[in-house]
Image (cartoon, rainbow, N blue to C red; front, top):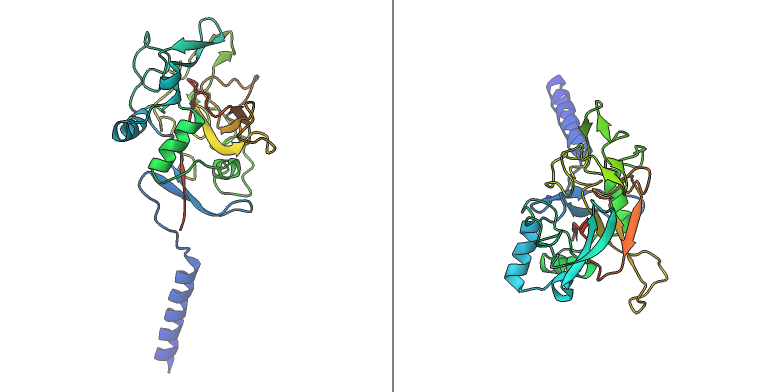
Length: 268
C-alpha cells in the first residue's frame, strides 16, 4: 500500500510541475514571443530593427522603389550646421547622401518612409506594430515594470558604458559621440532587454501602425504616423525619445536619416 501511495505522490508532483510550466509558441527566426497584456494580444516581434541588408534583399527581390528614390532626395540632419536639410541622392543605401560612405549592412535601414516599411512588412508576411504593442514590448511585457527605459533606469552603466545610441552633448549645437557613434550603430550593439529585444531605445525611431492623431485620415495631407523608440539624435533635455512611452511622428511619405522600423507578426 505504501508503494502505491508513493507512486501516486510522485505522479501528482510531476503533473503539477507540468501544469505550472507555461507553453509558448516558438517564434519565427529573428523574432521573440511577446506575451499578452491588458491592451494587447500575444504576438511575435522582430528582435532588432530591419537592417540595410534585409531591406536591400527585399528591394532586389521585388524591384521596389522607395519614396526617397522616387523623390530623388530625403531628410538629413547636418550635425555640423545643426539643421535639417533635404539632400539630393539620399536613400537607404546612402542615408546621408552620396558624398558620405555607403550604409553598413548591419545597421538599421533608414530613409525608409512609413509606406516603404508597410511594403516590406507585407512582403515579409508581417506588419508594423501598434503603439500599444511597442510600449508593452518596451516594458518587457511586465505590468510591474517601472523603469525609465527598456533596460533599466540608467543610460550609462557604471559611469562609462552606454546602454543606447543617443545624442551626447547639447542638441543641436554639438555632439561628443562618446558612445563611438555619430550616426547609427550596428543593430544589437548595446545588448538585449530582458524580453530579448535590441535597439528598443535609441539608434533609430521606428514606425508604428497608428496615426499620431486618431482623428486623422489618409486623405489629410497633414496626417502623420507615430514613431517609437528615439534615435541617435535624441537628447534627454530636448526630446528624451528613448524613454518608455515617448513618441515622434511624420507624414507617411517622409524619409529621414534617423527613422527605421521593425515588424511584428500575429500568432495564428
